[in-house]
Image (cartoon, rainbow, N blue to C red):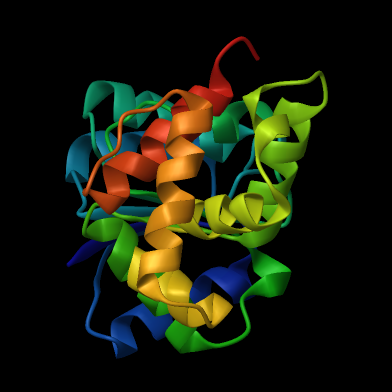
Length: 217
């Protein structure tokens, strides 16, 4: 599996390269700036991109902008954002395009190699890998003015956040220590309250929910 990695801090970039290679990934390119990332994504067409949000030369949202441009040129390009910051506007745009293969992890909340590698593989396979804090910020921002989210019960909001991390009903049931049937009921209620069609496709249902939350931002 070929990876393009974008991280401006040398020690972190080198550490990520070594970790990915140790788990069998091929590093197609490891770059430190936005222009280098844009060229690598266009020319090398990797299986997955692991991208920091803030890259030179602007140190603002260079990495996310490059990722969004690459996904517009190549819909479905798997992108895992690894950052210290939640850039809400661009994170919502990345999540809401409906083509899958997206993730957003906060650097200081990745606690071991297995967690990170699992996220890379899940995103590369077309799934989602979302840090709960990212989801909470996106949901809080969207619901601040009053939305269908207000009709969700606390348990339904908890289930929605776990759904947005890319977890299946079975995974959510195990996390919350309830039956899978109970989660299926909560899921149906969530879709009904948000006006979304029920889907058995875990990735599509997560993207559908996030796309719904992105409306009228």
